[in-house]
Length: 87
Image 1: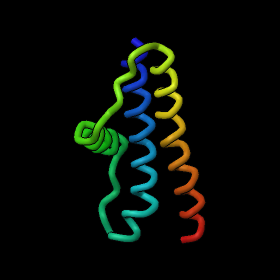
Image 2: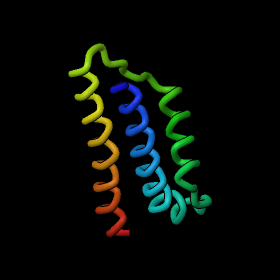
Image 3: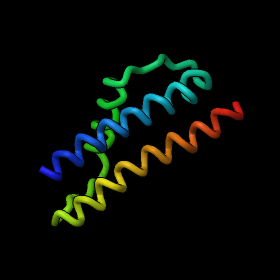
Image 4: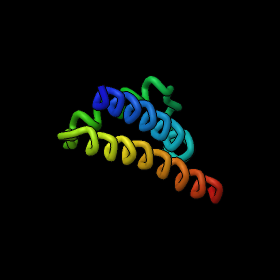
């Protein structure tokens, strides 16, 4: 149950981060089309499928991984927002 929750939260937050960062940087810089949240989540799933993933062995490790999966996209959005302010 914890692993499934971890995956859902990770995919949703990564999708939100990808959508925002894509709109802030890829659209104005390269003239690419805007992507929807569903498209961003799909791209995130494909990327995570192609890259190595850590499988937690116990509940404590799963909780730590969930915290990491929340902090990583939130930090990416925060840094991207600051950089976007200077564009």
